Length: 379
Image 1 (cartoon, helix red, strand yellow):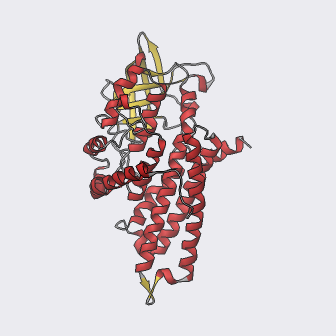
Image 2 (tube, rainbow, N blue to C red):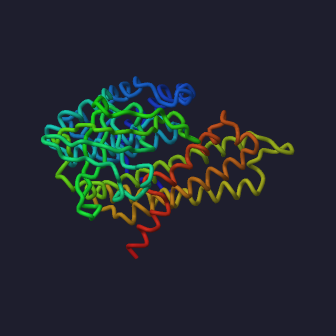
Image 3 (cartoon, rainbow, N blue to C red):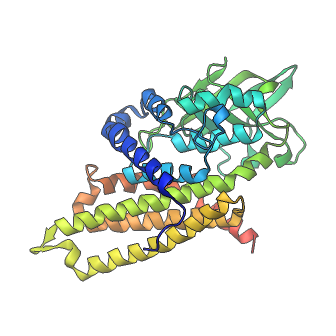
């Protein structure tokens, strides 16, 4: 495999710390968390103590002040461990980014240090029951009333929703008739009157992730909690979506690489007709195909990461990475399940967990059909 050039010795030390954290603090608790449909809050505190949350935030606000290559390591190691319950990357690399990039100094000082320590958990509420990937069609409204907005509406499929303490809510603050010009982003604390949460949704996979519905009934939100200017929310969302889609590509490649590793180990130890499964030509060819395709995907995604670090990643490149790698992840893991035979369908094997957890990669962050539409617009 072509050597990676993104990381140095400091990155390697950080990776060891992250890997140890997931192996010792997360993986042993995975089944218990899946049963209760959310992780324990204390895991957020432990991650904060180790400096694993909001690493790219400025040091003055509790972060490490490093670039996104460190975020890449966190996402990769989470995928390698098989964990799909902790919503660290959304908290640290999406929610915190909105506050850091578009918030006032007062907002940053209020929220970011507590997010970095794990004291509070962040979520972002975009999707609504009837809107899906079409953010311009949101129906949640925030009507100005003196120094407040009065927020009404609901959101669905919200990662970190059940445990969230602060939520970036996408809401309609105008009625110009031009959807993109009516959208604003509001920071809404979970303890505000009228803000309620549904129970964690029963999903096919990612069962330890506390995905839920959020409801807003006449919630009064101070105008001081608005991120940036009124009506600029859609533009802010568009600026961040390329990175968010690259995050999905990063986890897709890492998750598929982990699946291939598990399958190599299994086929070398499992015997059929007196021979290891790995010695049969069909198995060797399938494994070779997966290695080749993942090697190609790794090079493309690493190039996208390099471009992101230079703030030069294009929307179409991010969409390409998200669509192609999440599709590839599904293909690879399905082949790996097949090579495990009946045991590939048993949840005690990592490959079965990966199979049910990975399906959402082609849906969230904008469906892969939407990604193709975005790519086509640039042609």
